[in-house]
Image (cartoon, rainbow, N blue to C red; front, top):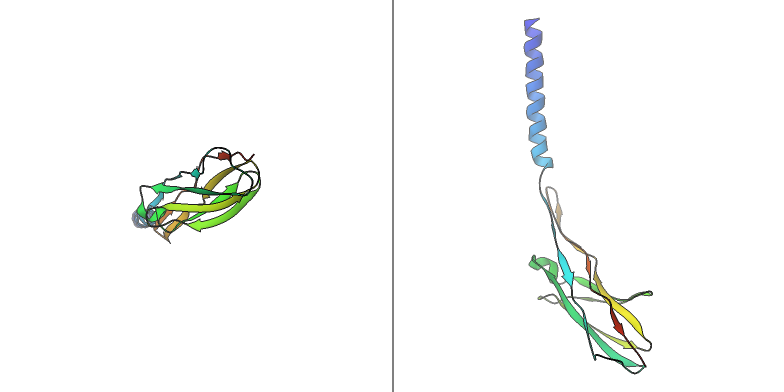
Length: 137
């Protein structure tokens, strides 16, 4: 009986050690970096039909890799994506869009994966700009 208890204790100890060892691997870190998008337009105010409006802004993040060479889309609110571009090294983007009627516009960044190699998963969170209205008269 004593040998049986010793084997049980040994088996339990090995199981616990194995579980602790595996949990150290599984507990590796995942980091998601926040992002934000700004948007502005030029010209401002009411524009004539057929005017080319420049939408520009910046993708910001505390992680430099999130802002450079990231895909940003221009969205006509209620209709969907109308253009795509990539940010420059500083996170700046620019769209030129001919507008024919009053509409609301915004930009969106879907996020991106920086590293997806277990145990280190690093991603950039998605973000969208405020919507801005372009009145056409």
